[in-house]
Length: 272
Image 1: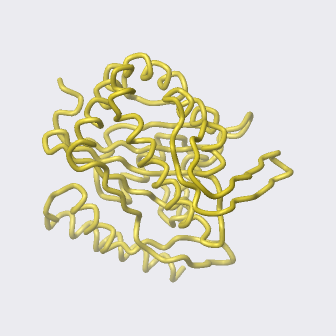
Image 2 (image 1 turned 30 degrees about the horizontal axis):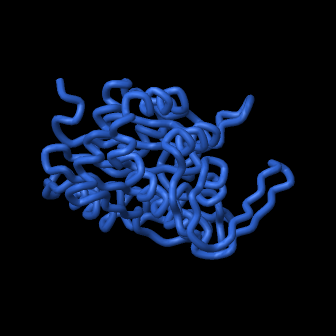
């Protein structure tokens, strides 16, 4: 059966996985692809989004990975968005750097001076504004940088980088090398996609780039502190309408009812 014969939703988790620590999903987004219409969309989910994690109550969505790895994250995202998640991809920091290097780097315009140093992790971000051809190490600095906008500003930069990465992967130069590149990428990630499916995915991305490219959005909501903890509180009705639009489907009565129930669950959770 053709892997991308219809609509596919793939959840991608960027995780800081360390020895003796399952880590949390530092970056989380869903790629929605429709091969027949040659359309693709990406929805970023802020890592502080407040959701119900099965067996653990209300928590930040990135905690699902710490509690139950990719399986619980996939299940949590599926329940939250109200769509079926077909496949998953987990990329740790080393894998991300290797992926960028495998495709020959990415061109990006750094919009401002970025500096940060974490003595505990020994991690430094030191970028200057202007056009740059980034290797994996430099790209990691760019996508992890947080400024006064916090996670929301970082998501904008991540989406900007993903678009540049997408164009590079979908370019004719990379498509010609896709079997070899896909094999390299497969060694750097954890996924339930096969090598054959990864190669096909790259070719489909190329077709989509020539038509409409990749549309991007973020879960709508507002920042809020609850008991001293920072959360992103999603706007459930708008988010579900957004999902229907991105999936190019009409909201069924069952979907509307599920949305109303989820919205009520959120309201009730604040009373406890």
